[in-house]
Every structure is written in structure tokens, then in C-alpha cells.
Image (cartoon, rainbow over all chains, first blue to last red; front, side, top):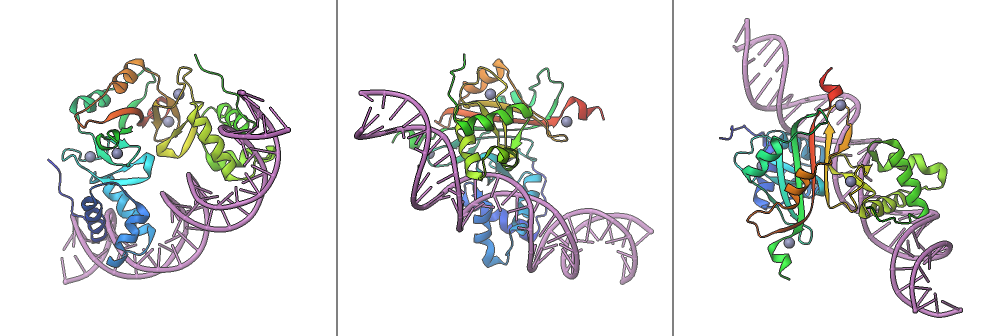
Length: 132
Length: 132
DNA sequence: AACGTTATGTAATAATATAACATTTATAAG
DNA sequence: CTTATAAATGTTATATTATTACATAACGTT
Ligand SMILES: [Zn+2]
Ligand SMILES: [Zn+2]
Ligand SMILES: [Zn+2]
Ligand SMILES: [Zn+2]
């Protein structure tokens, strides 16, 4: 059950854009797309992105410097994320696999470190690109 | 058994620096440190880094835009990497856990995607920082 | 030596992200 | 309703990270 946050004006504009795009978007591409709505500066975009990441509405794809809407309703905060990334077409999808997330959330090694968060990115070729 | 690559001059300078540092280094910090050795431009650094990543001598910590020497002798190419990152002191270490790597290398879901590579980053507090 | 490949040098610029400061809006307490 | 506080916004400038483009040199193979 996802807590409903009241997104602010800028946050809503930017979340809606990313969500509708259906894929990962980069910050300056977002900026370009929202300039007609009055958001003119990079910082306005980054501030909204920071907040949206914090509350789990979007995630950052670290290897791509891009942001994608959360595709997993149970993903309330971005503390356990996994993605599959096609190295050919750059299609990204969020992996929602309870075994995987359980395995990783419970992972511990002998380093004495307590892990509170992880991000996993798988790379390969998607179905489409494989068959070409 | 790690194949011996003959590193070029710039590659060797940059690898040695990162390796000796014992931790992650950022590209422009590397640049600053090797200027006395005649490497003057960002591109010279990035080219060496690209090659070193390709042959598995270093890895990129994506969430930090930083590079670390491979701490795992069997890690010939950077196709399966896992790190633990302290969010307080930014200490990074490479996780070398055969169960984990086996689990992830064999991971597949119903997306029809064949994964050839992954990168996993765990976040938390290291032993030192936890006890403060 | 001739060839193809890899690496280097150099300048310019693109792409990504943050600092600093002023102002406004939302939320909650009294 | 007023005051206090936190959250969000607006704006300018700047810092950080990474690549394009082009010319030259070194290396490995035949
Ligand atoms: Zn999610
Ligand atoms: Zn694809
Ligand atoms: Zn390694
Ligand atoms: Zn620490």
C-alpha cells in the first residue's frame, strides 16, 4: 500500500512527464520538456527529482544518469531496486521479483557492514534486440 | 588466473595511482594527480579508464562516478561486480562472494532477456561509522 | 617495409549536477 | 487568525563529469 504524498506543483509536472514517457528520462531532456510549463532552470528539475527519488515515485538508473517512474506499486522508498537494461536499445524495466529482493535484502557478508539499501542493474539484450 | 595485459604508458600510470590509493578515485582527481607525469587532458584519463574497465583491472562505481582497482583476482572482465559502499565515509569495497555471484549470474526472469552482465551496489554504514 | 590497430596529444565543447541567496507557499501550533 | 517552521520555488552562476573532432605516434603482424 503506497502512502499518498501530495506532490508539489513542480514535482507533479515532472513526475507526470516521466511516468507518461514510459521509460527512463535524463534530467536535461526533462528540463527541455517542461520549459513550456514554466520550469526554466536545471535546479528546479533536480530538486523535484531528488524528492521523487526520496519518496520512491521514481528511481535513478545510475549507469545511465536517467530517471524512471517506479513500476512496482510496493516500492515505497527507493531502498531496494533492480533493473534490466538493454545495451542495444537502452530499454529499461524494473525487476519485481520477490525471491531476488528477499535474497538481496537479507544478504550479509563478513565485512561487519549492515546494508540498508541496494541497487542492482542487469545488462543484456532485450527480446527484440536479441532476435535481430 | 588473470590474463596479463600489457598496459600502455598512460594506462599503467593511471592504474598504479588508483591501485595505490586503495579506494575509489574520481576522474578529475586522477587527472590532477597525474599531471606531473605529463597527462594533461581529461580525455587522456577517460581513455585509460575505459580500457582499464574493459579489461577488468578497475571497476566504475556508478553511483559515485568513481573508479576502484579490482580487489578480486578472478575478476577478469567487469561483467559481474558487487560493491559495498558506506554512506557516511564513502569507503567502498568489492564484494567477492561466490554464492552471490552464482545467484546473480544465473538469475533470469520472465522478461525473455538474457543477462550478460550486472552491477550491484549495497549501501549502509561500515563497521567504523556504525560504532560512532 | 607496409599495413592495420591501438594509443596518444590537444583543443574545444557537451552533458550532468550543485552552490548560494532571495522569496514564496504550505503545515501546524498556539 | 497569527506566528512559527518547514518545504518548495525562482534565479544566477558555477562546478563536475564526460565526449567530439581531428592530427599524430607507437605497436604488432606479415
Ligand atoms: Zn520501484
Ligand atoms: Zn533492446
Ligand atoms: Zn573485480
Ligand atoms: Zn564508514
